[in-house]
Length: 179
Image 1 (cartoon, rainbow, N blue to C red):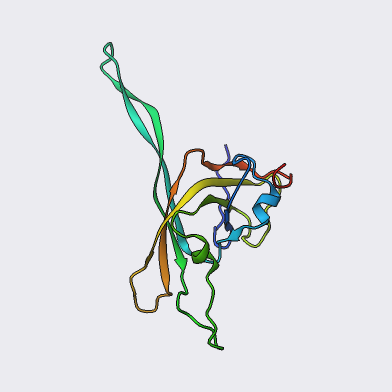
Image 2 (image 1 turned 135 degrees about the horizontal axis):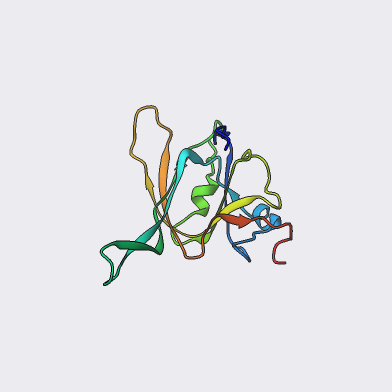
């Protein structure tokens, strides 16, 4: 058995996009992941994507046994939040309002999919064969993050994950959207 296991930093190696619709969550196509999507990667803070995927364990007690085992129960998604750059009320040098596509897109009640890829540079486009997480989501409320000295202007956006999420089990397909 080898004792050498390579490790690599994730800095700059995570890509997160919001996709309004997908035909198959287990095999999103390259076209679905590149056409009409919102690349969220540069709006999220380095620790800004939070989603804990867990599983309840159910006691499996038996009359004929002095031991109590457990069996896997329902899966859960908790602590689901985004910490994002929120330049609300900001203007550029010409006095023109600075847009914020992420905050303007991810409004309360919006549904769609977060697709996340780890291990490749965030600037690299999606390609067939890559493993991704696909989370069907409903967006919750946006809340300003409390002010702190030397802090960027941030907000936190909650979201829920619907059943059917693919946690790094979906594989990007080469096909075009809708086929």
